[in-house]
Image (cartoon, rainbow, N blue to C red; front, side):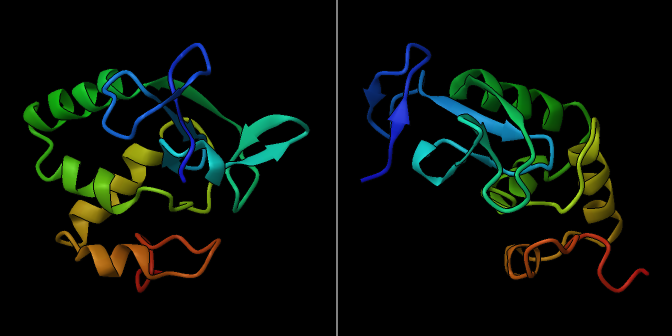
Length: 128
């Protein structure tokens, strides 16, 4: 059974809007804490060991909705497509860079986005 938590670390249900999600500096995100690596006791991306941060799921998704409505078409589709997928890079702005590449590639299908090998950047394939 997936491990969903609130800010105080207590287990909650998957549909709890105040559950906490984790976002890695590599773009990997989840609300299931069982999927995270425990790099030296600290939650990390299970694919590249990048550190990250946590936020309340409802706040994060509301921010994504606002971002899409501010002239960023299909951003929510992009977010859904990249759930639990390492973008293979680290750094501030990596998600925005990947989103812009995705838009430039005319919105590949979710299958094209998620069916890549670990460590590859799905948004730059075929553009190297």
